[in-house]
Length: 129
Image (cartoon, rainbow, N blue to C red; front, side, top):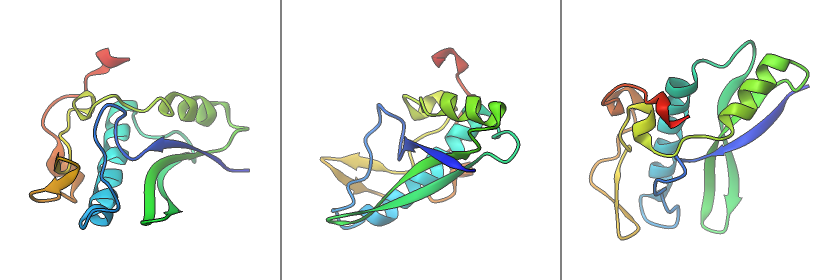
């Protein structure tokens, strides 16, 4: 049996894309891909058959995506990892990364980076635990 927990589209203290704005859909996809990468950098690879995914939900302005962790609740290692990861991150910096785009006054400005490896700027900061 598989289950999943929602982790969110970005670290908790970071602004996320507004899907109602013109580039919101592309930005939401990019931030989820980047956040999944950040979570793996910070927490390590999921054990056994646990895995990160991106789940889409319908919203009045389109599809809103967020990162989820899929796990087997009967597997103690997978369940422990999933419940630990559910806490997410506070900032991109905790994973040694920068945001995939800049938000000013609620709008995405400048380029949207879609390759999460291009967002790595430093080391993982496990002091945040």
